[in-house]
Figure 1 (cartoon, rainbow, N blue to C red):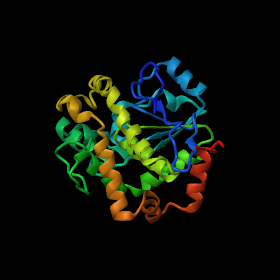
Figure 2: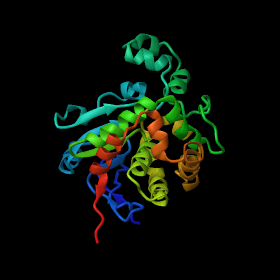
Figure 3: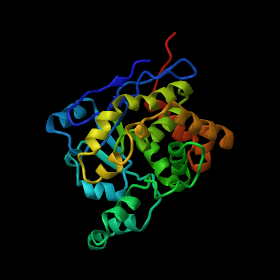
Length: 277
């Protein structure tokens, strides 16, 4: 199935998940759920283009320190857009200091210590759940470490009056996890969910180039080979297999976190196009 890439200045991993098939013969509606890399430095023409696409809600999955270090992005100044910030990493000292506005304490730390706590996917920090794939381990750990954020992010998507856009830094790992769960909860075909996740590999060189231009991410992305940033199909398959083995289904997993039947109905109404014929 072709990927619905949207090419706009300042964004390298923006796409619409519309047209993904569901197991019952339906399709995900276009123009309802977008996924992207960081929106931080987009030019005015890109802001206008996103608004023209019907954007009303942005789900920002970055940590508080990432947000603080990068500063407010252009869309935070748009009254028609609501920003929902829901970090998927468990809170630590750095995050608490950011939330409390204690910038002097943060500035007193060395850059390596800040990076280790702000960007917990570095080798210094291990995930809560470990499987045979490091990336899948972190994705599964989001569910244990921040169920509140997982629920809130999915509910923000379901309640958006217009297009909802989910992003993190690269738009592939944290974003890929939340988008996969949203798709699974409305009955998307599992292989198509895997394919959507894997599509970010097509843009991985451009993602790394973009992130390496910022102090927040430069050392982390450049210290690893390009291949380590790829979104491999096997990673998402391991993630889905673990959920199936341990919980039965994504719906059962989410029900255990507090997701309700009304939540599912609202998300289905938001994302599904009725089957034809």
